[in-house]
Image: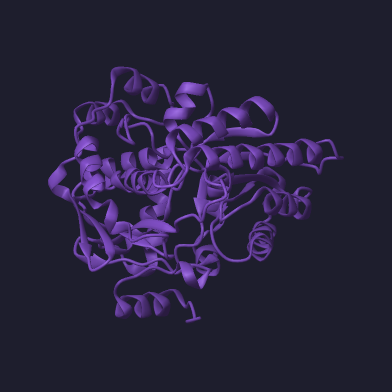
Amino acid sequence: MEPVITSLLDTDLYKFTMWQTMLHRHPQTQAEYRFVCRNRPAFPLTELLPEINAELDALCALAFSEDELRYLGGLRYIKSDFVDFLRIFRFQRGFIQAFAEGDQLQIVARGPQVHVMAFEIFVLAIVNELYFRRFDRAAAEAEGHRRLADKIGAIEAFVQQPARRHPFELFDFGVRRRFSKPWQRDVVQALSTRLPGVFKGTSNVRLALDLGLVPIGTMAHEYLQTYQALGVRLRDSQKAALEDWVQEYRGDLGVALTDVVGMDAFLADFDLYFAKLFDGLRHDSGDPLVWAEKALTHYQKLRIDAHTKRLVFSDGLTVDKAIAIYRALGDHTQLGFGIGTHLSNDVGLQTLHIVMKLTSANGQPVAKLSDSPGKTLCDDATFLAYLRQVFQVPAP
C-alpha cells in the first residue's frame, strides 16, 4: 500500500512556526520526544511494529518539493532562510527508534531539536492509520459520513438562529488522530463546501494548499516547555518563550497557549505588554468557561477591550460543546473552535488517545502542568514538584 505519509506538508502548521523559531533562536538544543498511548487499544500496538518501522523508513526518504517550498515561502511569516533550510532537510532515521517493551509500543525521537521536533505529528498519524486499517474501512466510512452529515446539518441549523455579537467559526485540527489521510481530506472538503461562512481553515498544511484554505496554528506545549531547559531562570521561562515569539513574528501568529503551567500561572506572566501584543489565547485543558472567565477578567483588569481579542478552544471539542461555549461567550469576545478527533475520526470505532510529547531538552526534564490532571506530563517527579513550587501551582 501507499505509505501513510507522502508529503512533508501533511502536518500541523504549528510544527513549522515553532520549528522556524527554534532554528533561528535555539538551534543547538538537544531534545527527546516519547510516544504514549493513554488508553487500551483493541489489540497491542506492538503488533504494528514492522509496519511502523517501514513507514518511518519511508518518511525519512521524503523531501520537500519545490511547489511545497514555494507555498510555505508565500506565507508572510515564513522566512526565506527557513525555506532554504527545509530545501535541504531530511529526517534522519538514526534519530528515531520504534520498539516493544512487553506489549507496550515505544517510539523515541532523540537528537537536535530542529531535526526531531517534526517527527511528532507524522508518528501519530502513522500509528493511527495503521491501527484503523485493521478494521472494516467501508463500514467505518459509511458511519462517518452519516455522522458528518448530522454535524453539518446541526451547524447549518444553528447558524440560522440569531447570532451573538461575534460569529461562530471553526477549524479542523485533526491530523494527529485522524482515521486516515483520505478520510480527513473528505471531511475538510465537505466542511469547506457546505459551511463556507463558518469553516475557516485547517491545521493541515497540505490540505490548505490543495483545497485553497487558510492554514491555522501558532504554538504547542513543546515550545513553552523547551524554555524550561534553555538556561533562563525557570520562573522566567514562559516570559522568555513569549518574548522570542513576539520578536520572531512581530504581530503575526498572535494566539498564545496558556496551559503549560496552568492558566493562573500563565496570566501572572501575561502582563499588559504581552496582552497588547498577542491577539488572543488558546484553551487546551480545564473547564472552558472557567478558563474564559479568567481570561476576560484579566483583559478587563488591564483595561483591554476583550472584543478586540480572540479566545480559541481546542480541548477535545465536539460540535455540541463548541456551540454551547459560543452561546455562553459569543457576546463577550471573538471566538474560534479547533475540532480534532470529533471531525477526523468519528466513525463509530473507539479512538486511540495517543501523544508524542517532549520529555527533556538539553538533558534536563521538562513538564506540562495541565489544568486537567490527566493531561499533566512529566517523567521526573522531582522536577514536577519543583515546577509546581516555582509557579505556585498546588498539587491536585
